Length: 522
Image (tube, rainbow, N blue to C red; front, side, top):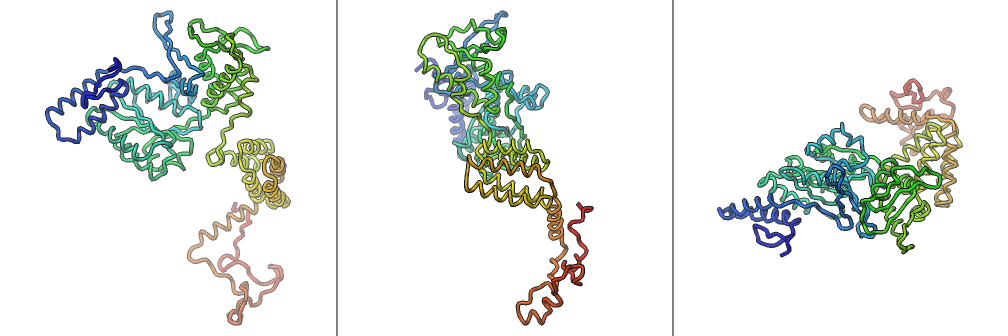
């Protein structure tokens, strides 16, 4: 038996220290279903005592380690040291362990914000974290998990992913959580990553257990919770919206990663040489190869990753690996801007053709077109095309805008939009991009008229709010297709003159004086 192994006080099997607590919890749960005897009661108490007396050791991921550094005050601080050769992604190696290390999302985690105050008090509510990839949802959950280890009574933290787990896994977690709460008064936090992968029927599994406090649910999603999550679940959880990280935050994250990789940030050719970033880490005693990188390269990478910290860190790791393979010398390797650009041929654009950005950007394009802002219209069209949007989809929206927003003010707009959509079907990308750009700019600059659109809305309102049955078609407007219809008066006295001189009415009975084009009603 290794020194780090301990026997289970219930079944006697030997497990590592980091696994004994979870195993003992399961043992207690399954033994609690049997008839309780004085012996079993005493063993349960012994198990509780042993578990509480076990020292908690910090969890250190493979590929990342901590180096002790002594400050002037004699205190020890931990500095992360990462490795580019590890099989673990750099973004996983360098996850923050506390809120002080967490970068960004000040609108949610600022010192005066409710979530930060609750986390500082270790009063963690059930919540849904909604935000784009790489904004820090999973990292925030890891910070909460680290806080759980510091709580007096102890709080269990269980992580599942809806991409790999099912309802049965959730049921198993709930069983153990119920046992922990009943026997040890210990709370359980369940972090469900990609919770939107569960359909709304599967999400019902969380409802009773979140309601009665058996588990504290933290869900992470990149989809709009209003559409992807059960409304009953949303009523039991607080939704926190995380935004894409700004370039300033990305630079901070990248510089921390570079420090952990023993890589110096140096000024470029036209930059000042005096900066705190240029200070070499004298205390780093790692035997790994030293690196250096230009400030402008760090800034370029921060700008090009579209607020996705995971993408930025992993792209940096890829660039360092490629450079290390090229040069096997022991001298310092310098990472230039060209090295970074060579690994990232294009910017990382957040665009999901079935997600929120799909609808947000097409809405922005239509509203910009409606406001006659040709620059903004062209920008949003370009964002969609560069993100991989189907050009025919953009063309269909332009056809709608040509009729809804321009209408009779420029009757040629509609044929042009239809021709553009058909041209996209014939050419495809990338040749059809100029068709969409030309049509979008033309529609943005065209005069606008919503007269027909508003009249249509008024007509729909009249039909939908009709009291009783819809009025019948007047007899003189009906087509007499048979002798019986003629005898009944269908088509009688009909003529083709203008309505002002025909002597006929063309609206149903009771609606003769309705005017859908009356501007006073709009």
